[in-house]
Image (cartoon, rainbow, N blue to C red; front, side, top):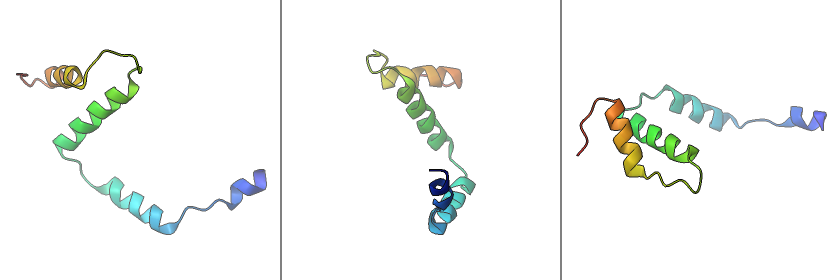
Length: 67
């Protein structure tokens, strides 16, 4: 199996696309959506925490008012 691992190659087009994506600046809105997505993804399947609650907590942490 060791020799098979050394034969795996990443396509150059994929490497270029990843480098380009990594160099892009994210907007505050993009970062917020990623934070919400991260939190939602870490919750247990049976969690009763809603996306709205996550939005509310993050807004409070950021010092924003929530309606």
